[in-house]
Image (cartoon, rainbow, N blue to C red; front, side):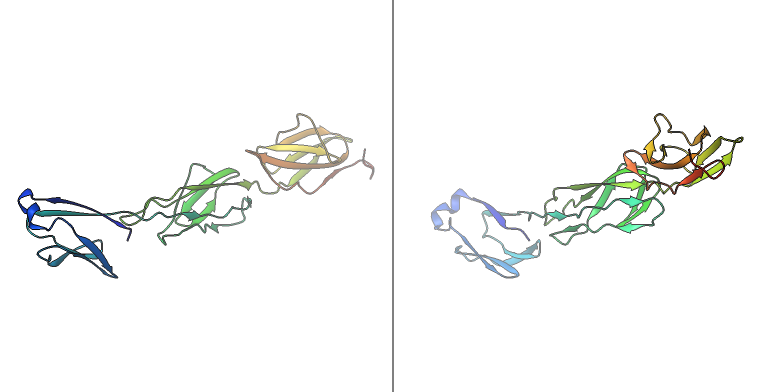
Length: 224
């Protein structure tokens, strides 16, 4: 329970009875009203506190003030598509359950469990909206990457000195020859390439895969 604030109105006819003042005593599970004349009878349970009822002619209102609460929500490490589900571990100081929201199509959340659906940047927000005893907590958001799976290169000869290379990823490719990025070569297929050592990396929404294993395009056992 939070603290209580108290408001009372006195029937003007009773003001000369010497009963305008009152005090409260917190007795663990009971909150009793004292210093009334006549002494009020204890009754009425409000928010698990047993409260005193003022004498006839008095109106006494009890307003419970809600406790504050806060969240802890650890940073989320980057994930790789295909690595499986993972658990969110947010906690509220109130002990109330934490719920999560997101706006990305790259994940799906069921309770505390996150499923990876596609590559891309994801922001997850932890929320606790409070209840009759606790105020809503300040939300906390964490952003991480679902990195693309490591691409695989397939290679086909296109004549005596040219090759065609294909990435296993349909989009987001950046091709490299001898570890140097090839300008404008971002398609799934790299056509009519001369011999050399080729690799590819996939980048989607700023989230990058591991670079592929090297594909060797060579002629007469020599790289060019």
